[in-house]
Image (spheres, helix red, strand yellow):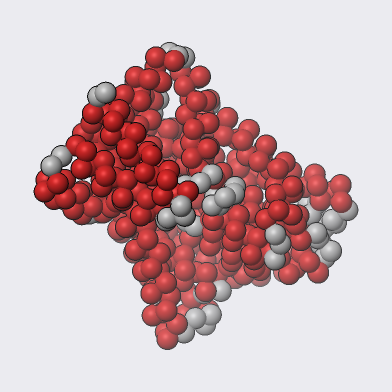
Length: 434
């Protein structure tokens, strides 16, 4: 038995056993990686190498953007920005069937685009829209399903922490190109949810609210312009070369803080608590990235990615069949693993295979991100699913029936992203980023 096969068996076996026992994904990855390292190297060398990999894995300038975007998102979540985006969304939704549900989707897309967090969008927007929809007679399960199904769009529409992690793992992949490439898939996801929500709303008789007057619409839009400008400043600055994504994340924190203080939605005394909560979230992600780096190094050292790639190519040489196989594997993994560790583990395995067929790493990154976003709304560990159910005050069992049609629409979007590269590649190509 080769070293690669033996190491793979040890690593996967320990990882699965620990996950079944209920260990956190970080601990499971760390212990399985440590056991694999002991199989490859003497103990003294394996311990030193593991420590070095943890440090080097987390020691990346690009990754500094993640804590800043998390902090900016938390500030916005508490700073009165969400309600202004909801008001704009209600104006944009107009008199569409199920206008409040449509507003929920649009607000999730806007808030997620600003905060970069699907769970934050589900909590902030769902918490605001839920009571309004209940007053209008919307079924709570329907409202929760729409909120949950649309919240992941913020993980695709930039800025996206997921794409920053992918850029770091893939190497030499432009964060700006990934950000721009995520626009069309994210909007496509949102429009699919809106179309289905409109169909069910019309079927159930959820009529639109009273028409908003032009004067009221202008007032709402003007009130929200400072919040919406954050997207223009950050993404415009990154694409224009004024600052990097990391520098943009720091600017986002400053802008969100100043704006929230002007709105008087938060007080200076609230900031330490928000910073502490952001630090805790950052610590979890950074710890996970560091431990996953041990696994990535171990796989590269033993040639596991090459072994898996050869195995896939031995089954079929058809690019389209290989892509569907990858999607199925990632979909399954995404149901029990958060997107960040999944990207850290599977990017080194699948990316070389895709590149051998001439598939752009940007296209693959968007495909993988879109796929893993689906896992955030599926049991057993879907973070957005749990957040949406908690905010909507409904059980997971009751909302899953409502979610099934949305899964079908979202999966159609995944196929479009996978097999039509132009969906993700057109904008970065036109922008000269590819």
